[in-house]
Image 1 (cartoon, one colour):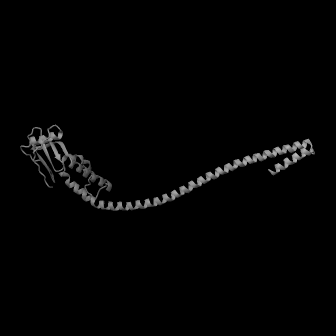
Image 2 (cartoon, helix red, strand yellow):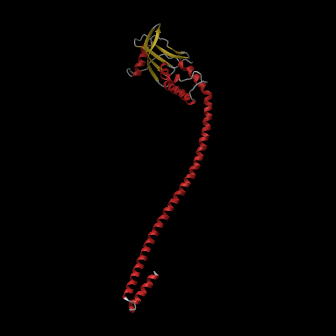
Image 3 (spheres, one colour):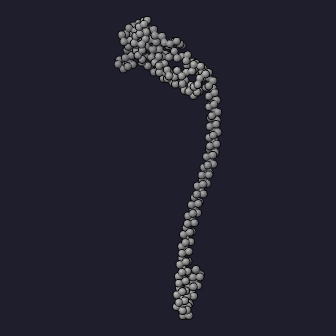
Length: 251
């Protein structure tokens, strides 16, 4: 800028005193214009570069902040992962201990289940037959995994519990005289007992479980009462109190 002022002053002085020829004056003026253009261009370029550098600095600052934040997150995540691994390892050891307890007792549970199967009602046995077939003949020699064996036992017990909390109606063929099967309607009151009656009213009675299966004694004079029970259950009879015999047998 000082150089520009010096040239301008010299040019003005030469014009005033008339000591400089016209050609030299023009040459000096051209150089002044060229110098002014250079200064203007460099000033513009510097402002552009200054703005670009400022933007770059801001961008780098944000990127640095992001990287520092991610680094902190990674440190926190690493700590959390270590804690989670420790928790999972502890849980694994706990499950291994529980599995060891179950493994040592599951054979006895399977044997107990097989022993009580005959005392279950026929409709329930039919429903859980696929699960019953999966009970191993020899609990000490089976290809089933511990999880499969536990799932099998839970399935049998859950279905048995469900049957025990409801009244179940079933149409069954029962033999009362040698070689003669009669179709009867049976009402099971959970696992405890049952009532049955045939369509003619000739055969009626109760059913009670035993360790070897169910017994179905015929009881004279109760056919109409049991038929009323069946009709009430099916929603075709009038709701009323029914005087019916009951028998609970301890296995």
